Image 1 (cartoon, one colour):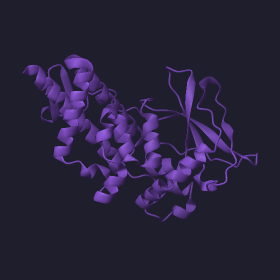
Image 2 (cartoon, rainbow, N blue to C red; image 1 turned 90 degrees about the horizontal axis):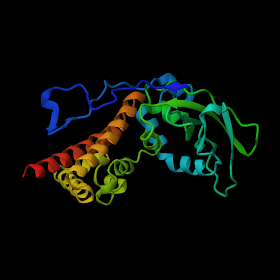
Image 3 (cartoon, one colour; image 1 turned 60 degrees about the vertical axis):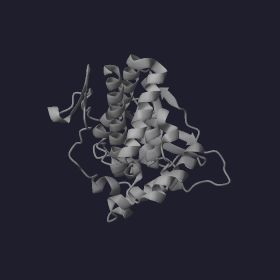
Image 4 (cartoon, rainbow, N blue to C red; image 1 turned 90 degrees about the vertical axis):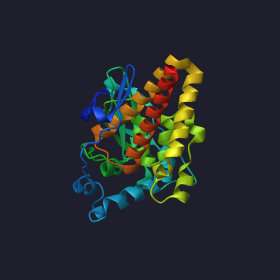
Length: 293
């Protein structure tokens, strides 16, 4: 079983007093700590696709992101159970391919199934994945076992890889982001009550070549924080608002733990986490300040 190292499991991260956002009974780091940068191993890429031996890593990642629609279409053609009993996981699964008039190329089909293991559940959710996507992003994930053609002409053989990560709940969002690179979707998942106020990835691409998160000005962050605080206060009152916002902070923290544990250094991913963290801290500050008045 693949078990990635668990990074800090609480909000007690290395910091000095100047980096703290302090409120009564609340102490959160002002910023999410970043591990030292590391690049993926070239050998991890060439073991899967030898023809990419001299291709820049960023070009590979951008190309994979461009293939996301075809990859998603391929997954939708496969008959794969959503989960299996973790005590009886087979080594592989032959996933039947449904007939289609517009079948994606064979390279778009997943190569493996990740079986997420958790001590709190008797079943393991299954996530179709592409080994090249993981190899191009995850510096701390061991190489997946090689896949092989199915013995059935109308099926895809997918090796099942058990994996344990620090947080089960946020793993599917992180896994989806690595395949789609949809920063807007990830941010909306972290801050669902703000979904209608968040710009789409399409509007970001037309207004900036620097990425999705670069369009968030200080003024826009302030408006989002105020909206988040107001929504939390309206739904649950002052004390409930604090608890609700802390729950948001926990989700971001858990996503951060998985990102660190897998060794992912994607710029937009870190930008989304930093952005969500900044908005949540500002919303918490507004709630606390309103209680002091």
